[in-house]
Length: 239
Image 1 (cartoon, rainbow, N blue to C red):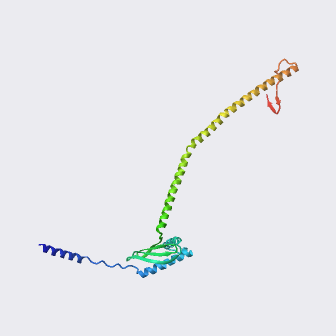
Image 2: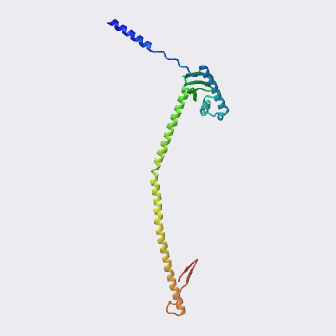
Image 3: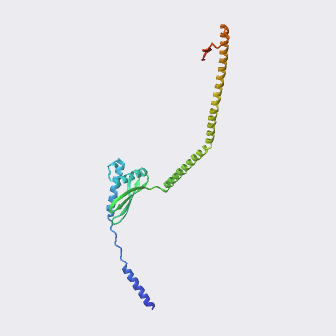
């Protein structure tokens, strides 16, 4: 019985192996030599446009972005020297070609992305060393923390100023009350002065009228009217 089970297992495994076919090899839409020639020509053209400032002559939006990316990378890597390595992962219609280029100061990677056998994106990425990456991270951290502390200090100063606002309001309100109180007092004083001057004038009128009546031999002052009284520097009219 065991022999029959062993034979049945061997037959089953054999049939399973024969059913598994070998996958067909994928033929890339571009050979390695063609890919190498393609990236070299385009990198040379991008570098030429970036160095000569003739990127305005490029009309395709995709290549305009590619030249701009290369130009920004050149500022970090220095002058372009040579192509170091080309790696391609191409399929029947799609794929990616990574080109490592050497610069005067540091290296960069130019990535060509293909879809439907046509290039759709070209980006240049600068390769920074570990120390440079840590330095940038530290600077970004310091900048972020510094911004937070500055904002907190400004907020604390604004909150601190809130304590002076009631004092200023009280100060201005006191000044306005003093002005309001001073106005009635001044008006009252003016009225008192005017009344005193009027009483003095009436007394003076009575004395003058009596003197004139005595000189004329009249018994009363009913027929006399004082038209005006002149003083030093002033003139008051009386009916």
